[in-house]
Image (cartoon, rainbow, N blue to C red; front, side, top):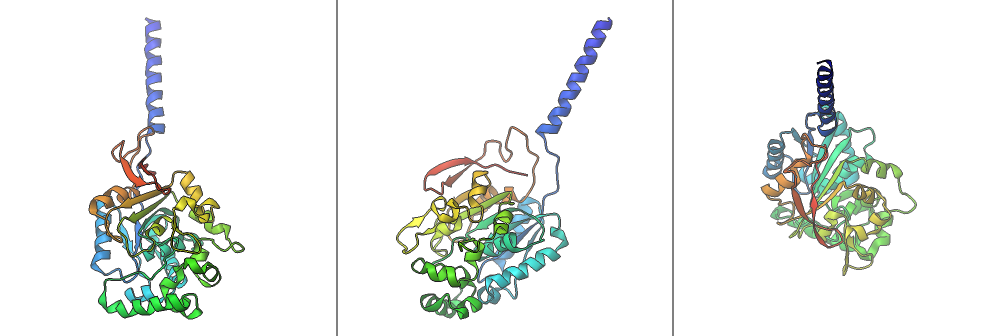
Length: 340
């Protein structure tokens, strides 16, 4: 009898210990989802129906709280305030928002993605950015001014294109016209590196002026989600949304992101993040920042909320996969890993 009692006691102890181990290692405790900020693109503002819809839908779908961060007066400021000044304004605002003090996520649209990256890389002492979702962002630059469907800005676009041809890297253009800060003319890389005031700094492109702090902050992201629209005619080339760009000297050949010097030499840590599995290169149908509801739910929402996660099974459908285009140009299907 004593032997049987001892055996039962041992079984109970082993069972209890096993349950505790499973609980400790196979499940992560629930934590409240982080808020997110949305940074709109050029020729837009927080009060527009498009931006309002983005924030409202993403908040509802992810069960999180979203905020649109306005820079200056909106539309006019998006064109006429240089990006370094826009980033300074955004930096002050995120530092002042108590709602972001424990960390937050960023959703950037078009030009807003560069402001978001500026917050991550330049904004010392700001709350930690967890996940960065970029939709149609010109991360490697543009070869022409972003086109707008708003007829009232046709004159602005015409003047802007003349500036690009005649003197996009002049002090006047750099201080008065936001897109000049990320205009990268392949035939004038020397002028770009010397006089363009924003993107060469953001991408750590100047050989004698690379700041390791920018790389350190950029690689602190848990996830970098880069969404490119297949029919994007606003960002030229569209591969800039993935950090791909024209070869220096001409617009004949486009380098995919893993073939660029920025990636190979790891100037800002893109390669480091990619090797760690924290970069998602995603291609969707549609035009510039026109992402379907289905694709938003599939590729954006999972990175805005926390879920319980089994140790040996990725949530969000368990075996959910995403069809992406490999940044080297080869079609492949990758696991979509949700990292809490």
